[in-house]
Length: 325
Image (cartoon, rainbow, N blue to C red):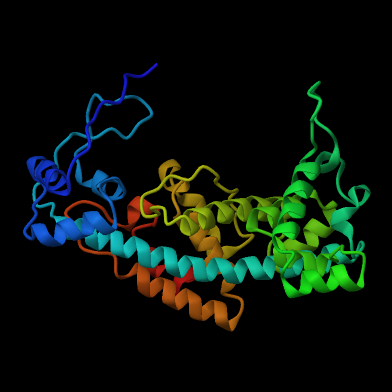
């Protein structure tokens, strides 16, 4: 049990005073106040963290830092880093949108081969997805049951959409899979794909250039996590990911072979899923254009007294790798 939280509320001026007292250089207090008002102290503190020296006797398993900033750290550095991270989130959201729509399309096409209403027919899905868990709880639900509840909630919340109203008017209200995917969230798409028979999962993986559906499934989950961070405006730059993905076998995807050289710290950062997204989208013209825009944003990383793209898992020579050229 930890100690009670007893830190007091601070005015904006007091927040600036706290930062200055810890060694952060603030040349323009009015601009710093505006930043605190529009971004927030706690959000900015996530970017400030790397400007603090590591605490030698910090708690195990935590990146604990001293309550002081390295010499030369300025308020401008922090805002520049926040602006870079925001630009990165926005360009990634664009790429993730392209991937998600293509993924929905592949799901609809390949699952639709089984039946137009495959998502309503658990007998066509895997036993692992549809079986009830081994529990005595009266409301036990299978993974499919949970998926279906959320899907039907999406249908209900979208009942005023023209195409949903039309299917309710002309047909029995059920949406065929190639229509239903328009209502899917990224996570719903990912979970339904994992519930499809192996043959369909393989076909979907092949649509994106992957030789094994298992590897592709892990990358879908990892990209879903990145999208959630972007959609909720969360910090990306030096974040450690909860869901990491399998690395392709050596030689399977030559442009991604370098992912096998990432150390354990870099493996849980954003570089690997960003690299995979760049490789996937690089197979078509719009995706290649997106990769150029992504690289342009990455090259705007600010010059800082502490911190670089390596904090996001990027190799030092990432610009020279075949993937990015």
